[in-house]
Image (cartoon, rainbow, N blue to C red; front, side, top):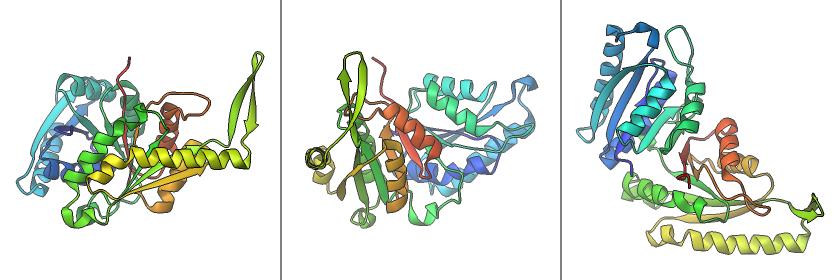
Length: 297
């Protein structure tokens, strides 16, 4: 599931904030880490300094892996998002890991817009790391509190195998007892009611909300039973409000160090539309984000 991790690097210090995450995944999962640097297309041929940069970065990562995991350096020329997406498709990459923003300049990408384009264009799971003050990842590990938003649909549960593998293979046995996986479902405070050719927004009454909460708690308990059966500490949470806002606030409140969610869900009057929700969480949240895009049907 995480056999080949593609790591786009643009030459900036900010984009290298993803490396501690990649190093831990590669070491614990014995994945192959592929560091990719894209030269500006106007160069026509690979510049020596670009080669030196990506080879040096690969050497740094190898030095942190303690002999576990393979590292490869790749240099391409072209438009960054096209080269990243194309390479991921051709080489059967199983995870793209990158920072959501980078520094721009004459010889650097604007990694924020590159990440946006990659997310839209790729079918691969993507791990997005924020550019804020980096946590002590190498000392503390990349996981101790994980948030998994659900919307009540089966398609939103596609994230579970990715979460399970991360937790059981990356987290040490000593730390597993302290790890928390929080399942979260946000209930909208109102429902849409069709009236002729128009839709009306009708707030739920107090009794209706309590019943919705009860049913949602039952759903989350059932959805999380597989993780619980594997010895993972799962907590179920139900809140009322706007989906993306509540997900972001909850992640901040509990100190989550990863949000894992699918990028699409069924839409409907009583369900979240995870595509738009994930987009808002991506652009306005403060927490690293694992996005798994569902296959188009």
